[in-house]
Length: 267
Image (cartoon, rainbow, N blue to C red; front, side, top):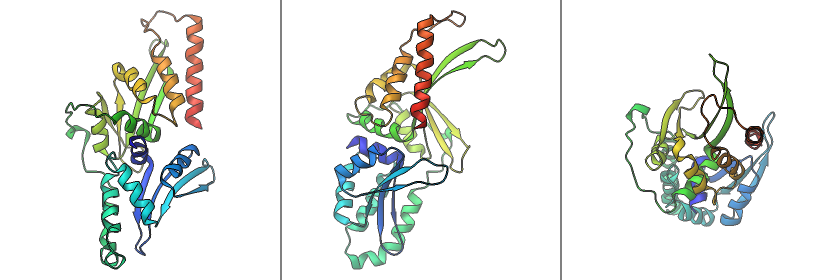
């Protein structure tokens, strides 16, 4: 259930409308994940194709209380980002239909407020070392499958024109609490991203922890399992001094991995 919680934390949403209906859903461009959610929690699947965008599949529970309660009870104990929203919806569903009429407006407002991240700056984040819980990496695999990114590439030094390889595991999310939650357990770097309508916080894994992270999430990963395996192979190549040439076979394989990861990221 930790994996489902991590993926729902990254890509899921919860809402209640003013007329009384409610929705729990997750929309993905990967068809496998909504099918897995439906197999585990029932619900329905819808497809959508918008102009100049990938086709998406949406798993959704629409105003069926028993299905919603089972889903909330199953993942809320493992959820971090969406836990307050799920528990608020559970409180609402625990009421009688008559009582819901009087609490509906405040529930709608509360859920909207919970979707907004806390007002916090990067400089306000204090890192506190915390132990890693038993289900953390299963949750992290789900969260990375939703909001994570594996990058391997070749770059060029501007002054010398020499080429070098670099790699990075990162996660971006509007919620600073979840970025802190990860950073408190796996040392990384937190930066602010202001390139979209939503202010994003980005966690970048420190190099010394990259292999450990890949090996830890690989047994649970689904959507980005291929990228994770390729990235793990890439970081296991021996480090070279700046001006030492790479063997031809190793160089060829590095380029293959870079192109394969780019292709998988584009799907």
